[in-house]
Amino acid sequence: MAINGSVTCVVLLGCLAVVSSVRFHLNEQNDFLPSSSVRRPFYKGARIVGGSVAAEGQFPHQVALLRSNALTCGGSLIDSRWVLTAAHCVYNGAILVPASSIVVLAGSVSLNGGVRRAVARVIPHERYGNFQNDVALLQLQQSLPSSAYIRPIALRTTSVPAGSEIVISGWGRMYQGGPTSSVLRYNRATVIPDQQCRAATGISTGLICFSSPVNNGACNGDSGGPAVLNNQLVGVANFIINYCGSSSPDGYAKVSDFVSWIQAAMRRY
Image 1 (cartoon, rainbow, N blue to C red):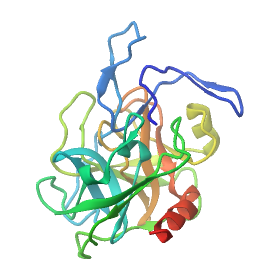
Image 2 (image 1 turned 90 degrees about the horizontal axis):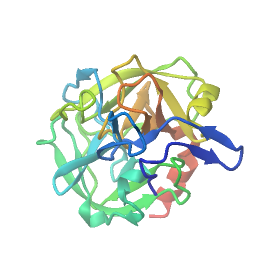
Image 3 (image 1 turned 180 degrees about the vertical axis):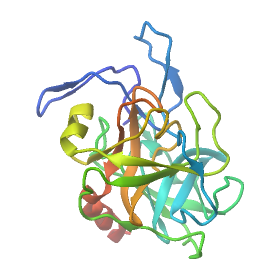
Image 4 (image 1 turned 135 degrees about the vertical axis):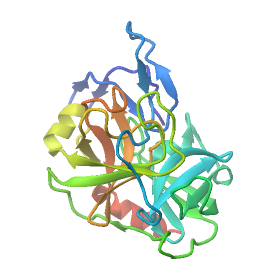
């Protein structure tokens, strides 16, 4: 289940580490931190801040998750009938969103174009919670056609070296408090060492963190979207710390840690 935005620290019982930074899932609505004396907006969500507009076919694996014809999250096509996204994208509080309410849009940088598919099955990670194991699979009712604009992406099976430059993409706010984008945008970020990621988040496994220059990175709406290195999916957008474009790293589910889970879930259906 998603953590309420008013929580200002997380205690991990395994190591009793206290994390003072405030984390927000990337799909949640803009809000003020109730306990803050400074009326500064903390954004619970993610779209790409900074960066550039994507060209048609540049990210053929990128999909959008729509509910009531509105963008809620991003995702990555990993097979003609399977999408990998974030677990918090498929929950309303503690309630799993029914498959019938989600539509996947693929094959276009515009939210008004592309190919749409209904979702047959929603499979969140069974140990999702407290910003951990934040991955989910969507099985589509019909396969998506393969083309220059729609193509699954391979999963990264090994860790990504610190210092690697990855590419993130998504539709969403172009800066904190700004408008969402009607076209797909992308930006670059740098993988930080695991120990630095743990220190910033308090999460020791299943997470990869990226740093970006201030006023760049993920923001409201990019949840579930991809981080890519060498045409391999290395991360799934999970959360930001403090606010969009801050100096804090962004947290993504580390795909290589979930390959076995993904493959086992897909084999069951």
